[in-house]
Image (cartoon, rainbow over all chains, first blue to last red):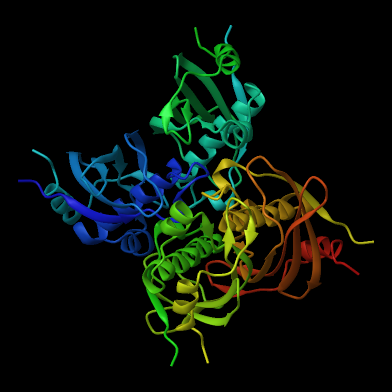
Length: 139
Length: 139
Length: 139
Length: 139
């Protein structure tokens, strides 16, 4: 049974637009934060370790998102991350954000690529990272 | 022949991340700005008129994006917007960002829905807006 | 003895600039989040209750900030909020952010004004809010 | 007679909050953009040249701001930058944002320091930069 990485998300004033709902570019900051915390807490390799220590990164090369239902100031959401596909140097993850009644607010699918920052080229995942990612692969 | 809405985009310090390239959520702020300026300059109805005067808006319900090539601090890009599909209350637009050599940096496809903000429901496009959008529909 | 409102702050990838340190406008988003959580958790009146239910808000009319020491990706900071001065319709708060060794990263002083959003004018604090703020006033 | 660096500022949807006015951290992104364009257009040394080519930067170590009057979606502002004080490695600038009727929206005073990014220490301004800054010093 695949693991699911879950993270609480608080919709803040800073996320909301003049219509009183989340301005969608802010959702992508939150989505990036989910990936960031997944790496640190779920995979055991923080963005700090990647970027500052190892000079590697996990840029997003493709993302598609359905904004199913709006969220407003003060909403307490839950993010869920699953791995849909794991390759040698890229991983496809699904991120959902759910409301308090488990109602779907958005569903995103991202392709992330392991890259050497300085050289700006894709590299294979470090084995330790790949092994951890494996646990989140949906059957 | 369909019109193309073009806009210069300056990659600023505020857009860039520790890897020295555009942090992808910032691209969505820029993409939203392209839609915003298209409405004001290309369609003749500004976000101010929509949101403040008419209480209508154009929320994004779906977006998919390929980040083809990275952009760095100081890059001068050109955004291009075309209409792929025009419905009664929704419109599918394609936005490309191109580098100085016309090299593709990203391609996004967005579905925008005309909505009444207060009532939070989709409504048909005002006829004047729909007519203007028609000019940008790709054959 | 005055209470101090404390909040953990995680420096994320989204906060950092090409120099690898926090881009200072992001600090102000974090500072706004400290005020937001202070209202909800420290004073018992959330921004949601203010903005969505009561149509009141707490805009910042003055802020001054010393950026004493830089913060980098992954830093775990602690924010501290104290009230320096409490008026009829305005409050002066001090917010500090400290590193893991209690080293000062920044110190900000903000003047916040209670305002009716629709009417765009200052109003006296609701008594219940003012009473709670009183607890955080530094002697 | 000192020169004044002026820049048009368009208040976008992305800048505005649920109260329909500019969310103040966004003003600091705009203020940073004014400094950025001043360096490139007013001083002849872009942030790209500083950060990417020379590995130097101009971090903000102090900022104080009065938010005098709110701005809303669609407002066309003008930013004005003047130099109040020019030191060996630091410069104090004043930035004002004005509405269409020259009404003051905000006034900020920033202390910027010339720094070597990699070494994280202050350095004297390159002479060519200092000479250009001199033109903007208010008598």
